[in-house]
Length: 115
Length: 114
Image (tube, rainbow over all chains, first blue to last red; front, side, top):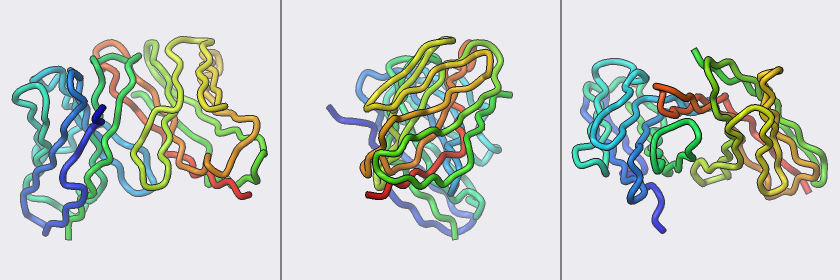
């Protein structure tokens, strides 16, 4: 079956611009996570959705970052007034339900470059 | 807060050599532990997991045992192949109100030569 998909695969933008990154989780998966991976590092947690609601947004670095999941499926990560330090690979993962025991399935990521 | 520390890499081995990648963690409560692998040009995928103390996860010849007393989850394989060349991430899945969000180590690059 289809895995987690993310679009675009690459995004180049200029400092100060607004960007949206999209995630399509595996059908039927209620839990959705966003992570950010900088070069040479492991992914870092940003936000977790259970259904339509953001159950944990403690990893969002500041109020320029926002994410939505209005129908409990597709999610969009939105970054306002982008900065060069936002350059990273943004990963989306989904699992059947939230919880420490459940496998998270990762998408291929969106590579964001802020010039 | 929760944290994961992996042995520094990169690791370079000859085919059929024994592999160990060390991983230790700090966590409150009772986390689950995972090894994820990222092959060249591919996304992160789960290699193995263990959900409670003394559990052993295994897959594709890789093994790791959840050691609560030493807070470790070292990855081992008896005989590596060229196709095992990849980046390996140890991760901790937090329980309770953390809903399973993953905390990752920094990753270990493994290169296996013929």
